[in-house]
Image 1 (spheres, rainbow, N blue to C red):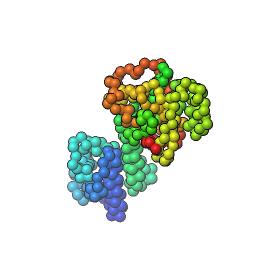
Image 2: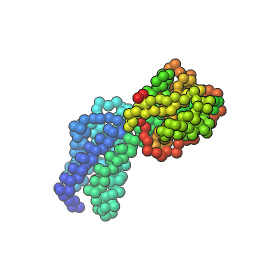
Image 3: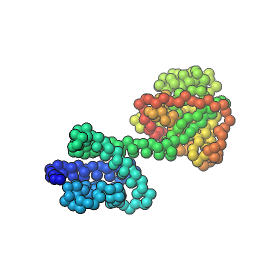
Image 4: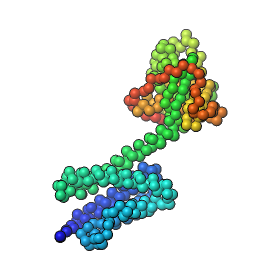
Length: 335
């Protein structure tokens, strides 16, 4: 059987392989949060490209045709060698994480490339150049999706907590985000300020007061006169703030009876803090509805195990946000 190897086609495929290996290594680095030098990524990609060239030459009988170049052990050894060159020194655990991310991206991207190659070519002669180009497009796209998925999962485990707000014998429980950049405090009482969406805390407020706070959130300051006849009038404060996209602003805040923050470590209870309201979604996906400052997790406020019950009160869960809106999360601080 006569086999042909066209040098121009081989050169193009070797070049595509080198670029693909470089992108694959860079995507793996991004997925696990590492930043190796480009020189090391380039050197590692040369190893993968050298292996591909040897395999192609062996496929037409020029180099060790009987050697199992495409066997799983050989592929694994080449992949590990590439990872070690790009990311050494490595612990066994980090090598395992890198190998899993590397193989996941490689297999998914190769599957897309193979599909494209067969779609552009014939069943007996796939268009591998087109498949290679598809591989180059698929690698960074998949890497971004995997990175966002992994980091969102990690973020949920590390920073997402539960907040319960009590007022007048009623309580609402909200999914919240631990905002380490939130340093907002009442300038007169020097109390930390938790920021919450307005709609979820509706059960805590009389309908008239809710409408007033909603109007105040839209900037209608004349609505504040309606608080004069309310029993909650002495609980409201104006808190100056600054955040990303807004140098100066004012938030209307309410002093509740208590606030309890539930984390994986335990429950932190505060009776001297404020809850500021925003008439919009804090998270476009509706995953969290409040921003908790780090000051609320002070050791002095620790109550004990996260399995303890919250302070007494009639539970009235808040209306969960349905997502939407255009506001993303931005840390907030004193003006």
